[in-house]
Amino acid sequence: MTDEVFRLIDLEKQRQSEGLELIPSENYVSVNVLKAMGSVLTNKYSEGYPGKRYYGGNENVDQIESLAIERAKKLFKADHANVQPHSGANANEAVYFAWCQPGDTILAMSLPAGGHLTHGSPVTRSAKIYNFVGYGVTDEGDIDYDELERLAREHRPKLILVGYSAFMKIPDFDRVAKIAAEVSAEHNYEILLMADMAHVAGLIAGGVHPNPLEHGFQVITSTTHKTLRGPRGGLIMSMGKVSSPLKRPEHTLENVPTLIDRAVFPGTQGGPLEHVIAAKAVAFEEDLQPEFQDYAHQIVENARVLAEELKRLGFKLQGNGTENHLILVDVKSTAGIDGKFYEVALDKVGLTLNANALPTDKGGAFRPSGVRLGTPAMTTRGLGTEEMMKVAEWMKRVLDICVEAGNENGLGSHEAELKALREEVRRLALDFPVPGI
Ligand SMILES: *Cc1c(COP(=O)(O)O)cnc(C)c1O
Image 1 (spheres, protein in one colour):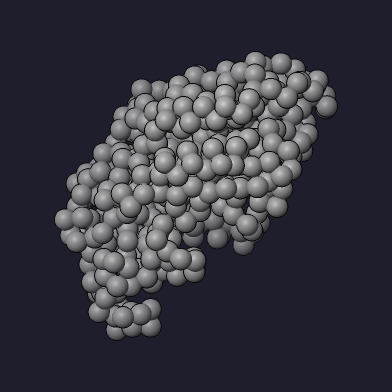
Image 2 (image 1 turned 120 degrees about the vertical axis):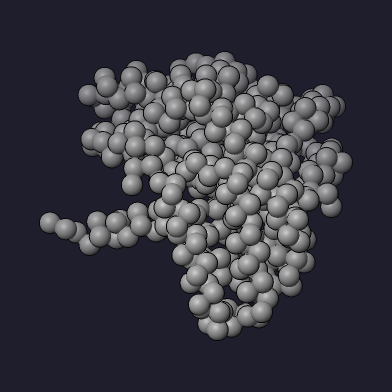
């Protein structure tokens, strides 16, 4: 009866409890979200949309998906929401497919600057279909708006994308919208403005980050499992006219919500994961509560304090700090070691984060110069600014050990020290239980 899988799940519960999750794209969902996800809804086929399904027996599923849609619309003040994308990557792919033809140009932040793989990395399917042009960031770590404008005028993109996985500033959405409006007017064609808010969606929902839909953008894509604290999945919000997805609408910006519905199903996906959609609905209701605003506020405050303390301890930070939940440490110029080595050493003491390229890195993403970390998961567990000081101190101690050790093999001679640190981290972590464990 005890499948090996359940033994491994128990080990994972222990790992999550005894360590601190610093990966900024991870979080802990509530018991109710877990419950909805593990429900019998997984048994049901429901291709189509509420009221327009290709299978019978969807009377309950229709109501559940409608709840998810209404709650998402309310969270982001959107005209329309599609809650079916299986992941953030699928959400992005569906929007490109909804609006662009093969060969069309998409202007997006380049991967080394902080953009996401799905924004045109040559290893993706999208990059084989569309022509991606990448803008970068300035030395101060902000979007290079002048470059963005120059590239928009030169390449006349069909779609301009603001979104990122390693960018610490609040984007100036109005400025991008103005650039798009000018290029669009000058060349007499429509440009779709899309914001991939996979990382900061929870900050938007929590009222501590501007909402692109209120600053001239028409589409937001997101994951639901990062700061929104829902199940693993994707989400698309849009502005425009909502009509039946059964009929192909004219290809205009006004019809983008319907074009997106058709691009998700049947364009790029089959049957929706209704157990996950139910869990999205539960998470969105949690996100609509006043306590979620406190949570979002605390994420940003924790990140600010952690960044300040790291700087005080001598760490060099990309962009010299953060305005959101993300911190990118320039490990190379702080201590002369690479990000992967530092990641491996931190893992040994129960601090989990990921090595990440810096905008200045030239290729070689396997041994990048930085590490990326963030506060959403720790904040869910209840850690506050006091604990952030402790985390910074541990990070400094591990950094010093790395410098002395020289490389990963050298860590062997620091085992006792690392073990003692591991115990300190474990003790603090156990004081802040993971929901559902
Ligand atoms: C995480 C992320 C995605 C991808 O989400 P998946 O669910 O892993 O496919 C897309 N865009 C951005 C900006 C992200 O940070």
